[in-house]
Length: 261
Image 1 (cartoon, rainbow, N blue to C red):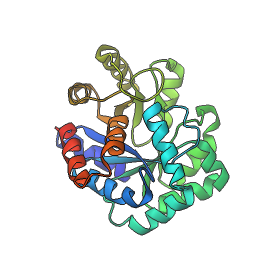
Image 2: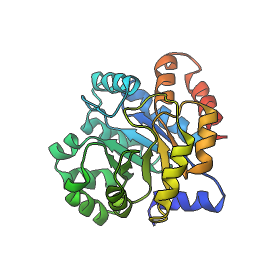
Image 3: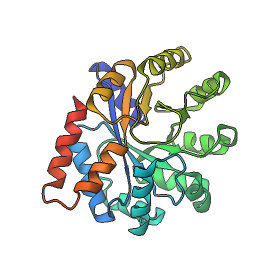
Image 4: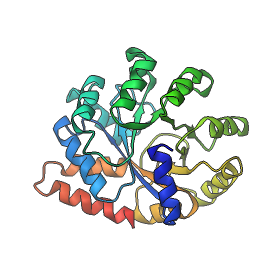
């Protein structure tokens, strides 16, 4: 049992839902990445989704696009990420998910990238722009490494593709709550509930909901109908606006704990 599966098992025993937070590595700078991750860990976050900055993050809205650019300007490269994990992996006790576009994996070499990520404490991988039809090598290598492959399902995914995605996903499935890009959205709880109910009939893999969640009330309602929530833009925007303040980490802790309730 991998750490992600173990985490969901423990949460289920406690009748709790997963709280996952996304932050880009190197945002707002590399030196703060460690403190941000450890603060999330201390604040009650169950899993951290660490984004590898990319120059053309097509799935992201303006908040995360800007964060990616800031991280790239801070020289947050793949090599820097791996060096960072080598240095601090013993301090990070929550399961780590690496979110990336396919280009960095291709440039490093798929097997080398995944092997290195696993060695450095990454528990699961999300590759935003890798089509299911072209992912067989990726799935095969990751499975041999016991590295969870987390795929996305959207409101427009066909039934045939949903079934295939539920079959090949490991750890959990990321259900994108709305069509379009990341960022604050008005969410249709009724349609999300209906989609999750349909997916649960396929297998027992946990289903976590992301994209658009920006308020505590939304988070609470979506927790009730899913196995967990994923926050990104609301946390990243807070970091951007507050990281220069003296009490930044303390106030980040307070914000995150509000969503933990």
